[in-house]
Length: 253
Image (cartoon, rainbow, N blue to C red; front, side, top):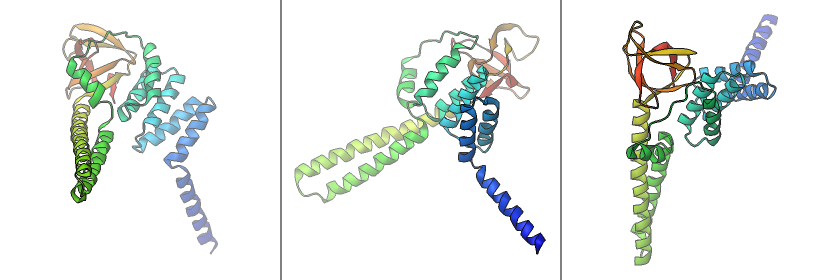
């Protein structure tokens, strides 16, 4: 009987411990450690949450802040970028990313965007594809509701009003649906990454003995345009320059 009671107590304790370690609890613990300036302990808690495939711009933003406090520039920039990929309208992440980028050694002048790229950045990438999808769902719902109201209305003025609203909602649905698909396609095809190596040579070809075109340092953002099975990747930086680096030198986000 004593053994049974002991076994039940252990099970209850184990269950309670497991419940106490849910993402919300871990997040609160990590935030408390951050506020207490215990940044190494805080990042361990945040990474426990991340290891459970928990996706949140707030989580990534806090991780970026913690790494920034630890003066680890590459992971700081990496997590700010991840936060913005989840929520492009996270203003705090945008602002802190600017400060983090100032600490990176490589100051690369960006090539001006084309008209299509500006349209993409200002409209299609304004929200992530989940947000665009929700807007499309709301647009479709409003369109259906107002079309039904139009159908059962008797006066011509009301019919005209409700018909116009339903048409407007349908247009919102169509545009949002298109932007959601386009946004998802761009994110899927575009592989962005942050250099994590302190210093990495960018080669003319995927060989160690090939000519070094230039060097990159930790924290630099690159576009991965090709990858090889032997551990080399072709990258492109903001000024349009390309080259080959070892794949282990960066982390995609």
